[in-house]
Amino acid sequence: FAWLPRWKYAHRGLFSRDQSLPENSMAAFDSAIRAGFGFELDVAMSADHRLVVFHDDSPLRMCGVEGKIWAMTREEIDSLRLAGTSERVPAFADLLARVRGQVPLIVEIKSSPLRLDLCEAVAFALDSYAGPFCVESFDPIIVAWFRKHRPAMLRGQLACRGDKADSGRRFGWFLLRNLLTNALARPHFIAYQVNEANHPAFRLCRRLGAMTVAWTVRNEEEYATAAQWFDAMIFETWEGMPDWHPGSNG
Image (cartoon, rainbow, N blue to C red; front, side, top):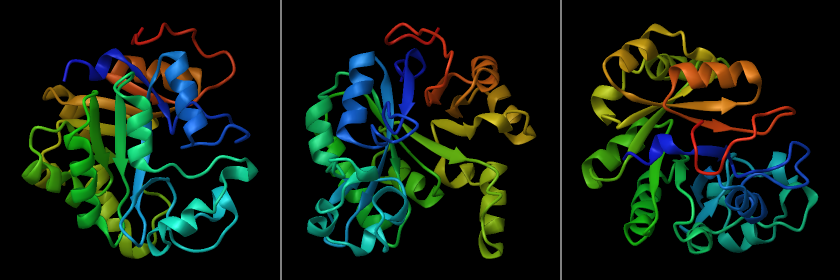
């Protein structure tokens, strides 16, 4: 897995802040490839069990349509447009065919009521993919599924504060923030919120030799934190960001 810290990873592709080049779009992924960056992307499942590249549970923020992605068919999702542009929600298979191993991928698997079917479908799609990739999720059950069924695939546990969680989910976020689910999921790396790098659980895991990935770096201060405390970073562009060399971690 030595390739993982050698790259920097554009969050949801190299998209623009005003979404004129939308996140998780083929255009944003093409932009990352041209710039020489790996990228992170989000995979969800439609109601008819097709894999799509989309972050939110609902298409409301990005497409102005109410509903849940897992309750929509692939045909309904195909009718959506991202942030008022002509960009469609990509199919995961189309994305893999487009990238063809040119840059490494961080594949975040979104939790949903379809998560076990989603795990199987993502694993099957990646079984025949020749390029470098890893999988990650906030859902430790998903990470544990890959531990059991695809132990050789590089897997990571995402974690953060969970400040916005409703009261019924706060205990779960407490477990995640303190990395107490690692006994179940046994991740190969920890993907941790960059401005939480001083948390004792994160520092302990790092001291014990865990590989760490920072998300999401958006300014100079967070970049400095990521460079000091993490092996790799997921970033979004900001004014005055460093002129990184393609494929480098410097």
